[in-house]
Amino acid sequence: MHLSKERRMHYLHRLLLYAALIALAVVVGFPIYWMLVVSITPSEQVFAWPLQFWPQTPTLEHYREVFTRQDLQVGRWLINSVIVSTAATAVALFISSLTAYGFARLRFPGRDFLFMLILFTIMVPGQVTLIPVFLLVRWLGWLDTYHALIWPGAANVFGVFLLRQFFLSIPREMEEAAVIDGASRFRIYWQIILPLSQSALIALTIFLFLGAWNDLFWPLIVLNRLEMRTLPVGLTVLQGTYTQERALVMAGAMVASAPVLLFYAIFQRRIIQGVMLTGMGGR
Image 1 (spheres, rainbow, N blue to C red):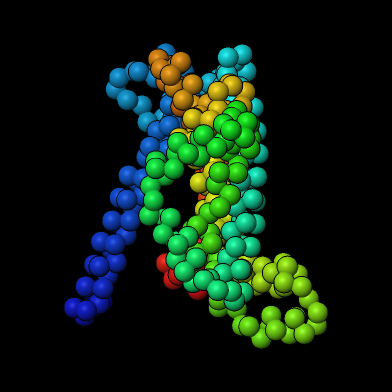
Image 2 (image 1 turned 30 degrees about the vertical axis):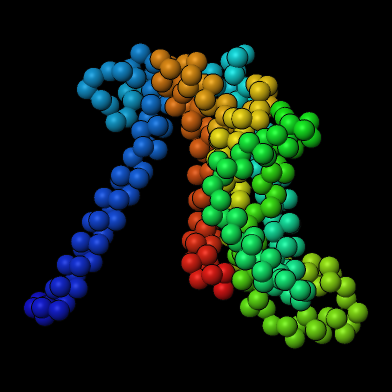
């Protein structure tokens, strides 16, 4: 069958595109694959040469050790991460959406100037506010508590910006009809605006949850007790104490990564929609 020159070029371009995507997927996915392989490899075979891309006798012993060693509290760290990530996401989502509603639907003097002032804080590096926030948390007596991990991130400027842009696209006629029916401002926000903004809220929820789950720097500063640590902070203990037990460290890293990978697998489409939504300014 004879193909025209344009047709051949079209197939060639697609072939090169698929080849590039496969190569990129291998580069990105190989570290995760290798982490899994090392975590199920017996300790005496971890440093064997030549390298084995799949162990001859896979074992789950290292996963059992991660959860049963007395000096490690991976189960407690996992629970802490779930509690902190869920609570921080819920608090930031509520405050961001309420603030965004005020900037998008209410009229008051200085509204636009105040909104621009809030946006300006995005350009302030987090390191600049680190010491003041730490002193405030210490003054409140929140060091080594869940409060220290949940409340400092409650005011999320990116969330306010994203939701405000989305709220602006909702027709005002719906809100005006609710006002005529006697609905309060909070009821309009809760029962009309939020249900119409599910896509933006879900996208923001994903970003907030992943950010809270992967946060390492701030929890490392405000947490001291071993049982209060989150999973990423706990892994620093694992890595520092068991440097030579690489399979054990990799098993801990897999335990920490598994919820994020599962989260991404379930909400992959929502995450992509969220990135697209962010690129379009929330519209």
